[in-house]
Image (tube, rainbow, N blue to C red; front, side, top):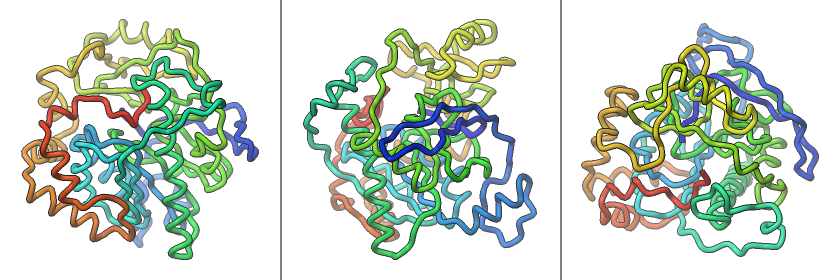
Length: 371
């Protein structure tokens, strides 16, 4: 569920058929200030890249269910949206009991379009049967189809907004609603002709957690159902789950707030045995701590998250957990009012769906996510 900002791979621009060149690793440099819109560009990092990012139009598309958005939402606003104050936010999400949490997006600088819609079954075609497998997907092939449909829907939302406003985006950042960010993006991430994904979660360029590219490369990478053939990973490849409090970069790895059960030499042995291009995570120098993810989140996960994420994020988590109907409706109405396009039910209906259930329902894995 976690995204980080320290490592990436770039996938070279591919032909229209969707084939990608072999990925190459590249280490990101640390950059503390993010991409800001200040008139005075005297921050650290590549000044030329910083200025280029100011001039560029950037679309940020969040996809998936809001199962833990009270934890991840503030980090997305802080490290992604506020670092790109001229960027436009797009949301493509399923209508479920957690959708009311999108009220947290009222803190976003700019909102272009929000789509919150009920998911209907997607017919499985012959090609889907050939290239998809239910293995490692908690909701089978249908779960993959639903998630890929959300990913490809980013292109529909963005193109619709471009036609309506007569603009063209230079860059598209596509990431997950349940991604927790520990820092801002490096300005070197924006590389023309390349599609950038986190190191260690490359999946041959079909990374489902974070991808950044220009319109041409993004069109190929996001067209999961119409263009890109899905490759079936070998069944023996494992997916480690890192502790959210790991001292090193999370680099797109799965994570949760937990008391780590595998650290030091144990984590090094696990990390060293992972396939480099499947779900590898940086483990050297004691940077990785692993959870026992065989069961549900621990009873003390709130305290662990609060310590790892900080007081500001902890306050948001508690506020969403205690949120009432009136506050929920007010927040979603604010998001709706600031969105250039709202394609979803009335905020009251979304809040009623979420707050009519126990907040513990967010422990469930949303059908819109692959493993």
